Amino acid sequence: MKIVFLESLGLSVERIEDECKTLEALGHEVVIYADRCPEKNAERAADADIVVESNMPLHKDFFDACPNLKMLSIAFTGLDHIDLNECERRGIIVKNAAGYSTEAVAEEAICMMIGLYRHVIENDRITRSCTGVPMSPGREIAGKTIGVIGLGAIGQRTAKLAQAFGCNVIAWNRTPRIVDGVTIVDKETLFKEADIVTIHIALNDETRDFVTAKELALMKRSSIIVNAARGPVVNAQDLSDALKEGRISGAALDVYDVEPPLDSNNPMLDAPNTVLLPHIGFATKEAFELRLGIVVNNVEQFCKQ
Image 1 (cartoon, rainbow, N blue to C red):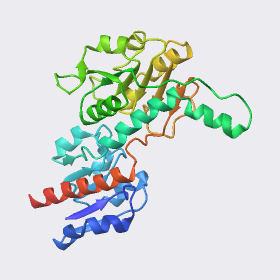
Image 2 (image 1 turned 90 degrees about the horizontal axis):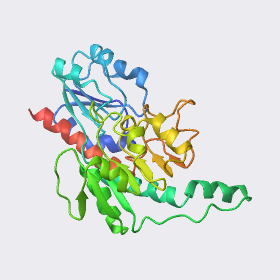
Image 3 (image 1 turned 180 degrees about the vertical axis):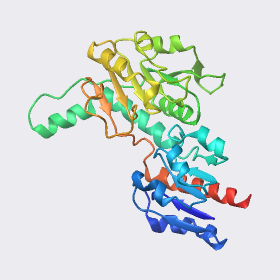
């Protein structure tokens, strides 16, 4: 089979070649592109049996150009950028890299909480300007109530890290789930009681606009919200309005309705008391190594069938 990596997944081509030695020894052809070039995806994968990529959108026009395609090994957790209905119609198997970024995203969520509480970005700017008065005092997350939306692997890891900081953890989950030290509550209670709401649910028809003006109105004025899951889970305009009106204290986002770079009219860009990151929660050296092993193993298992 011909296996095409449409990008190098944050690693060197040599590192991927080394991981794919077993596949090549079995007679499979492996082609690796070092750069991400979405406009060339269809051309590069035209005769591929298997394609490996992370978060570049793949839709009907791509599949039309790849008649031999049998499998997608997606180096990402979410699959909302893939036309899964089209894959199902064509019999294309899709596997993700579940679990590779659990630690990375959970640590980033805690990082963003502390960043907001201690005014890290603002105080960095003040220090570099050599003028101005530091923004203080900050706040400590110890003793605060953390409300975790979604108790999948990342949500559970975030809860455990929060507990290590001395936080009280409450959580909402779509289905009942028991997690040590975590109190399960309904959605309304979570938004009312949490000092920090941190979101860790997948994007689907049920979770789009999961957080709107209605939920934000339940939050304390001193509370903050963190989203390292998927952008459309939170209504960006409603969140921006709540921040501008002082109805909540702050927001930290790593995800948006569209992948960065953001449009200049994105409502979050002029919202106060924010930390805005360019979707890097998954991006650590350790996570990249782990996901390479997962995506190559997914390919190997498919080739054995």
